[in-house]
Image (cartoon, rainbow, N blue to C red):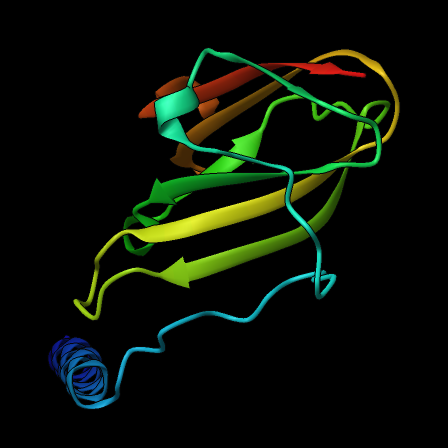
Length: 150
């Protein structure tokens, strides 16, 4: 019994030491100003830029044009924006990016998606902001657009 208690105490000390060390590293290391682009196409000309101010609105664009969606999230708390049933008939994702918008640790992050309109028609973009392990039903925000593509 005595050996088990010593093992538990030693394990707690190791975890504590790790957490303190990790905290010191976070405080000392500079926060990057921008995270790397994922699937980036350099020089992409954006025709339409939308964000939370456009939530629930209707926007228009032409086939072949690129729309940029900009939404803030608290990634440090595990939140992310996820598409609901992404419309691959009308759009393709040409790039995704995360930008740090503050030097403060734990500050919100700006997520950007560039979508190219593939063909004319009407489409809806729906996104939810939630922790993946909690599920969409516990989302803290919803973003949607009705898009008319000429």
